[in-house]
Length: 256
Image 1 (tube, rainbow, N blue to C red):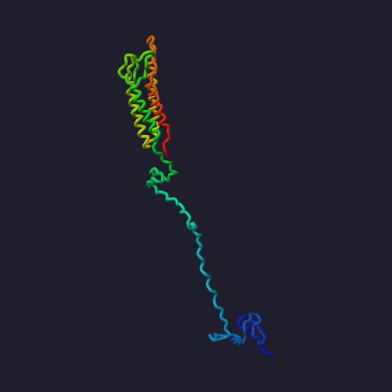
Image 2 (tube, rainbow, N blue to C red; image 1 turned 180 degrees about the vertical axis):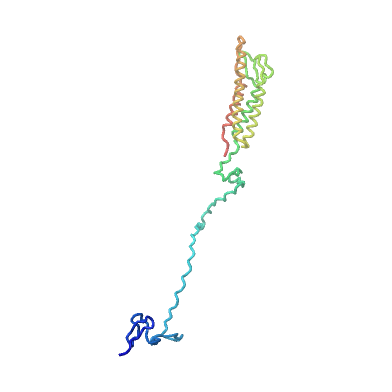
């Protein structure tokens, strides 16, 4: 009967000839035996060695794809060219006269209003109205009923003894007739047309108002003369027609 063995690691009592400690598993009897199946430092030419290559690195992330820019398809052969809008003028730039701009730098303008030219018909009518008013001053205004005595508009400046009325209205009518002629000439050009139209209406209305006032003043004087009767003559109606034509000249449209 052999003596028991003590484990050098845990001091457990083991039967004689035990290879491993039944308590801690320490191998008994010195260095472990060499494993016949172990391959220590195999050579490069060892055909039994299995080499697993490392996995390849992951590919770099792809760049995000840009959205394609839309381009107009080329025109078909023989097709008319497509009109492109001109670039918007910069702040403060003077717009081209061909675009109907007014030169106002106050931001992009809306659609340009159509330019209006002169009024040929309006100019002619104003010229005729001014000429008739001028001629009426030296034509008979007032006639005495039953006689050949007549009074012209210009006679009122010196106080005609037949009427007994002295007035400066003929000077005013002379200035108004010249103004109607000037307005007619300017209406041909189309410059300041809106103001000229208003002026034509005012001048024509003033001519008619002065003539009516003179007639009422003369009629008021004559009514106090026993047996005196007066009539309106051709020159008076000529002046009324001149004022009416001047008003019409201001109402006629101009060419576009």
